[in-house]
Amino acid sequence: MLLYSRVSIPLVRPFKTSFGTQTTRDAVLLIYREKGFEAYSEAVTDNEPLYGYEDNHTLLHIIRDELMDFFSPDLEPEEFNEKASRIKGHNMAKGTLEMLLWDINAKREGKPLSNFLGKSKGYADVGISIGMTSLEEELSIIEKALKAGYKRIKVKIEKGYDLKLLRAIRDRFGDIPLSADANQDYKREDFVHLKKLDEFGLLYLEQPLPKDDILGHSLLKKEMKTPICLDESIETVTAATNAIEMGAVDVINIKPGRVGGLRNSLEIMEIARGNGIGVWIGGMLETGIGRAFNISLASNSLVNMPGDTSPNSRYFRKDITNETFTMREGRIEPMKGNGVGVTVDFSYLKDVEIEGGRIID
Ligand code: OSB
Ligand code: MG
Image (cartoon, rainbow, N blue to C red; front, side, top):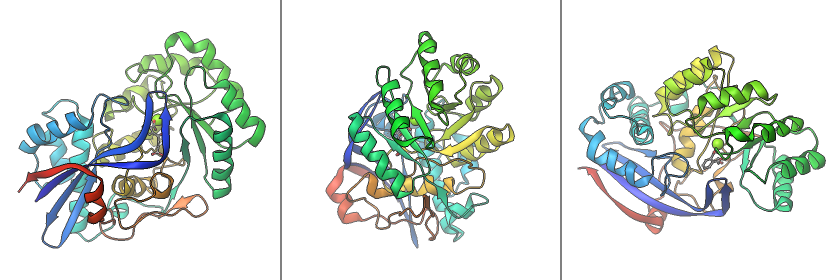
């Protein structure tokens, strides 16, 4: 039996990026049951298409009305990808089913997902992604994050809220590992302005330009000293290859739910590292389910930079999984149980469920 559940869980604090402010995490979850175990997956979409073109509505439509023609719980992820390639785009919808298959397959073989995916370091290095708020509040969050052991501080910026923020952070905290994420807020006309960010010695500037402007990023990379990280632009293995060959990227933020799943993620990770491109695993404010997938992947030995995989408590007072992650010395260990290693707290799920139902009986 395959079920979907749309949930809305309040965030501990609003999360503001250049594209909007989230006060809840509105997730689509998949729950698969067979004799002996339950498997899960979580989409990276939101209720509106502000980060990419897919949203919770298009995702459920593509999963139920299109991808079910190609899906079976008895497929290997690779076999599903092959069949699903008939449907163009919609990698977030494909990725949600692909990740479910990884959990099913790992559970049938009795292995933790982190080991099932290849060579795991046994932990993930963790950075923090801080939403925009007042300058004073951001400085206070950074101070606490550094004390908690986070290995990298990432702040969200937008046109008009960048230089002053970064200057204040450098003035107060000196040479900390710092990056900035613009979520596509700048244009090619802004290169003169963006070059001013070079003085802050950022680890990288994440997704400054619109996601389809890979050439623009390669032009910007020639002008800037700061390394360029791509997030939204990398929706496929081809996009990653193109960005690397065009000299548009130094670092890739991989979100398995964005690139069509874990197989594509591993392929991008291998291509990137083979070309000297840095790799880290991002996040989309996931519940404990998506977080468990991200942390399993972030523990892979191909990942060489801290990711956006904070412990559950940074996002939710209460999460929908019974198990939660804790960070020690800037590291989080993947769950030890089979597959993703988390289980759903169904009594809380009922409290936060907006809508749900069966996809396969
Ligand atoms: O650009 O990485 C992003 C959250 C929602 C949408 C896009 C992004 C983010 C984050 C938060 O930066 C990462 C996290 O802590 O989950
Ligand atoms: Mg980003």
